Length: 227
Ligand code: E4P
Image 1 (cartoon, rainbow, N blue to C red):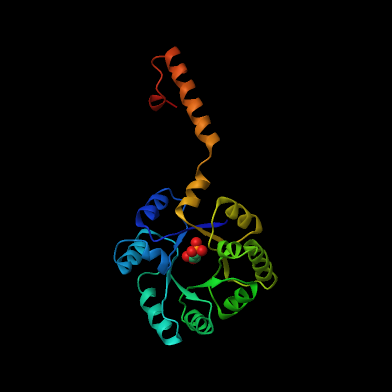
Image 2 (image 1 turned 90 degrees about the horizontal axis):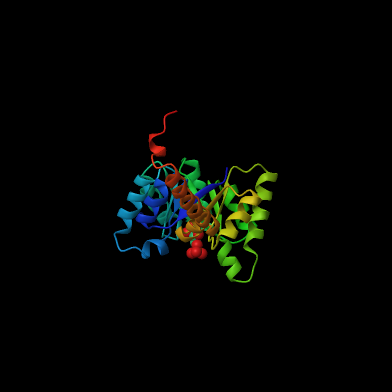
């Protein structure tokens, strides 16, 4: 089953969709944390508390020692913490080390199947191709997902393909058709997945017709119906 992650550091949005029972995890990054008006460390800890599934928390050092130091600290926030490491030479080294220690990683800022192969070989738990940013640059982001999913299947890689930088619900449908493992999306895309104008229209017709039924049967009350 495709997993749905929310790509945000907004606690209200995380609580809202988590309460609906449709959230499998959360991804954050420094840009998303910068949009919130609270202590980023407290926000990350709170997301870890709210969400049962994997929560990606990103390191900001770029050298191997700094990345490992931050990764170890972030990993202690909770057993569901996944450490986001950028796709760089030091990042690959860090992923290899962390994976040998049993710490889950998400290789971020991936823009090609070649980068995805290397992240998987290093032992990343997730690899995150950024499809929206590729589309913005005039490339076909979804093709990177197609290629990566096929390559990982060819070799039975256990690394999961996490579709990132999702811009609209069509991205979600396409990624799910390809068979990507996880799709992370901003709250507005998840909201658009839920809503459909024909659902709203259909519901108001059903409710109006039920009022007619009640006028014909004044004592009817579904909440009091006996089996
Ligand atoms: C993924 O984990 C990233 O946080 C995110 O999807 C980046 O998306 P953007 O291109 O909308 O910033």
